[in-house]
Length: 162
Image 1: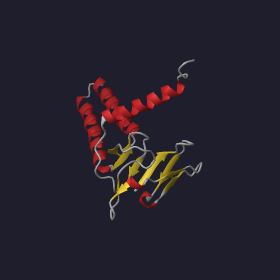
Image 2: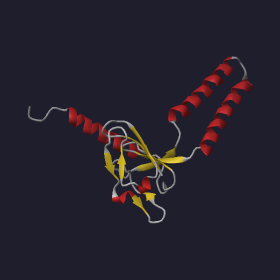
Image 3: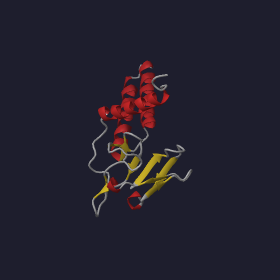
Image 4: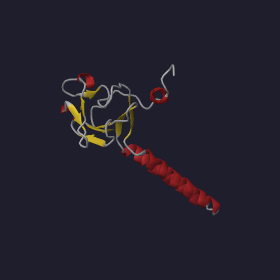
């Protein structure tokens, strides 16, 4: 299994492979070491991820291992192309462009593998051992987002009593 996360100290991207055998996740830029928690994996022969190894969160979700911006870009290009064809009164071309865009989306959906992502720190886990997690849940995401916002607000607020 592979992990990709942002170093909490220097914000450099960290990519490590064979994390099942590691006891420490080390940043190659600054050397910050994150200890792999003992309860990070479950199972003896085939080790499955049980929680995020880069932060204390147990909330992970399954997503496609594909850049969202590229996916949105493909849809936008298809939409713009169909609008141009529609404006030129090319009905067949309009629907052909929309059909091809949908076909590209379907092919990518079928070919691109899944990965796990952490709601809290955004770490991504690729490879086997990612079974047993649910897809994205907006309520869980919002809970983590609100928690980060509250911590930032408390950090910028002046101390009480001044």
